[in-house]
Length: 193
Image (tube, one colour):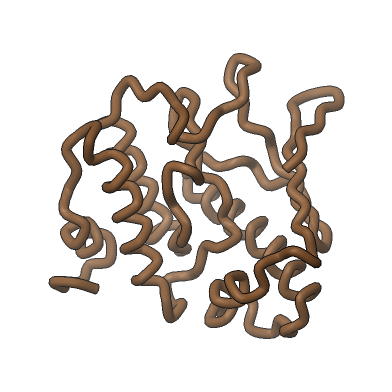
């Protein structure tokens, strides 16, 4: 990831390397996503689809009112988005942030998970303290792996997202039961997804 600035706000430039991209991992998130069913299985085409997918997922999240970097433009394996800064200080990963209200952050992230599922429709699929930036509020990042609710692994990814957030914040505040959250978000009544 690179940072660039001209006149006005800065931008983040994300370049996916075609030669070193993890083809197998990317493929598991693309296969089954109806939006990318026509993607050829070549490494180059998969990386181009991944870039387009992250742009689309950021746009959907932003439209749903979830704080994310604003997606500006993509071309092949390059994604340009807004650079998240507050008071000229870059937002940092949640894992490194000084969290003054963990219960409030937890409630906000749980709200984001619900909004993603119901309003934007994707499940993040990689949500953790590494993929949340924190300034005055949490921002979700790295949305290339996000999948739609009808993806064959959507429930598995949703549960993993919930468990990751609970694991990170359980020593800082009270957290709800993983399955209880999963059922509340999905509307299912399951003992274990």
